[in-house]
Image (cartoon, rainbow, N blue to C red; front, side, top):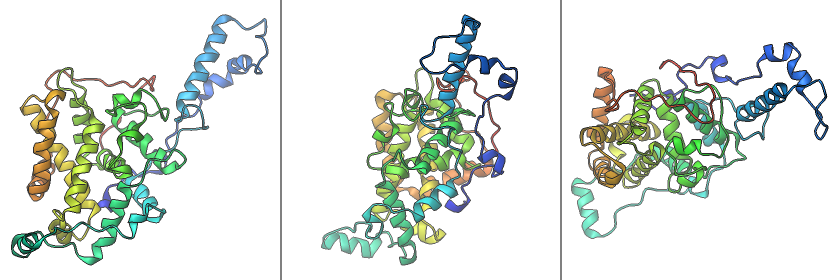
Length: 343
């Protein structure tokens, strides 16, 4: 299993990472748009037809969509790889817990005795910095003024919807991805940017991208639908708790990394959830039951979940498909969605 450093944008070609939709040259070369551009507040010229005015309005609306931030910037932010995003947080000034966060120890004489006899091992000192980074990201709020944060959002949107276009910062399109409202930031309490970073890993790592898209498709099912991103945030919260309670120390020590273990456990838990959801015909009404079972597995049997993911990826099996026919997701932000191959 690869660590955090290997979870990159599937194809790191510069032209792919800088994929930004620019105005279509052919529309400008014919002189049509030039004739339609009117100074603000001036009446239309007599020679402009109603069809031309309508074309101008549609083109302006398309440019606003392409801005990625509701028309407040000139171009949609370029995609970002997991590695680049992680390097940003490594060098950024994160919440004060970055230097002081420690996994809380169990208290009491009996708890200390149990730890000595059979409790999980402590995380090795050389891994504490990486643990602190993960916990600090979990306390870092989504910031509209931070370009890297916006690039993370846009990359998640594009990878799940297979869109070449960006979308506005706020809007109902985020509800289509499984957030509760028009602002994803309101759903990240308790997980912060780590919640988005784990989705970013899930949709960029070439091993897990097909799984992510298939689970997202299942989440859109007519009767077995569920809020994909809300489920994701809940899984991240479970992973954070397992880290804080030293449930993952043995695996982190074995692999000599923390964030890579967190990401793989996140993917393993999502795989487990999708299997349960399909096999037991899950619905939003009984989602709490599935989440409780998943939390127990994440804390009590993390190694078993990870082995299940390893076996799944090594066999190259397809994740559970939607019980009904294929669902073709088209975003309200994207007038033309182009499908991308899974690299």
